Length: 151
Image (cartoon, rainbow, N blue to C red; front, side, top):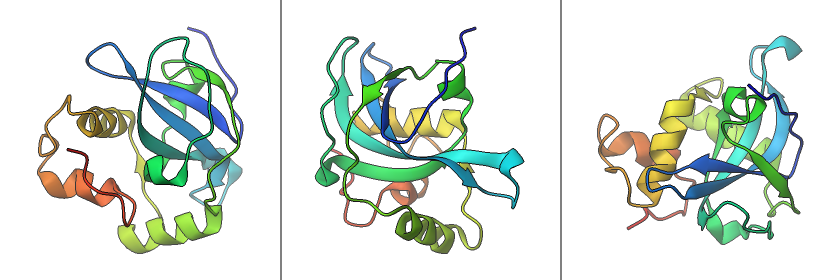
């Protein structure tokens, strides 16, 4: 399996159930979640933008950001979620997003596993039921404040 490095502002694709892709971007490549760099994970934003293989990278507007989460880096490293380029970041502050996650998660922000992220992105595109991952509260909690539940 191929191994990839990733960096701040990289765009990556998340496979959708219909053969298309959802779009994510790395806000910060290594946030320490347990006090050591041995457990540093990327802080990523997830959008409602649908992509096809070969689509060009264009900047993501703040209004397109549906979620900001700490994610398991394995799908990025193993190119399951391929990096397709990089663009400037929308105006989000890492510290503010981490504080919001800390408050939401009741302490240290939680790492979100690959399956949850893929299900959420598919639900954002209407390809997976919004209540299909243990009820509507699971995906609702992943939405950034002010982001509407996708139709």
